[in-house]
Image (tube, one colour):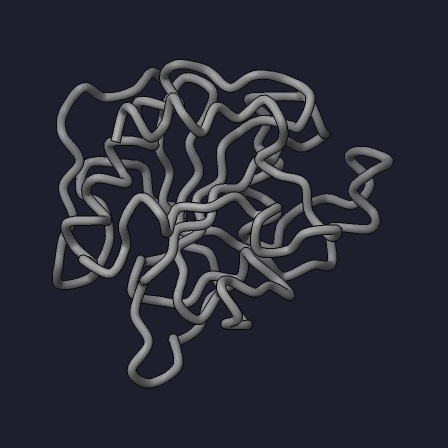
Amino acid sequence: MSVNSEPLKLDAENAWLEGVRRVPSPNFDERPPGSQPELVVVHSISLPEGEYGTPHVEALFCNRLDASAHGSFAEIAPLRVSAHALIARDGALTQFVPFTKRAWHAGESCFRGRACCNDFSIGIELEGCDWQPFEAHQYARLADLLRLLMRAWPGIDADRVVGHCDIAPGRKTDPGPHFDWRRLRRLV
């Protein structure tokens, strides 16, 4: 499936995107009282690492990852993690958690002295890995999504779009050195 050329729209009532694939994850909860999205965290993921188009990321986010399907899965299969959205290599977008809810994507994290980034962030996964460039479709779709999120939550601006590596340095490296931040900023 390739990226839809239609502009993204948000159903403001339930914070789901309209016209994109929805796969509700059980791995979310309420944000703390008074918290709302103020930060976007860009991640990268592929399961197995470096393999694309597999059903394993969706399975991980929905607690259905078969630990025996690959040698690297035994350690991660028990994890309870999610992201708000995933952008595939071809730009196809899947949403797992409503943007108003707290997805479990950042783990131990800190942004500008404020800990627990899950409380006030939106997590967007790009299908990818640290050692390969991302696709043009992914940058275009991510830019579309960021513009929509910035309109919906004015506290989010270009300075509040960061990599997982920025909020969990030493623990996380994604989206990795091949992610082109300048390109993304030009598109947004």
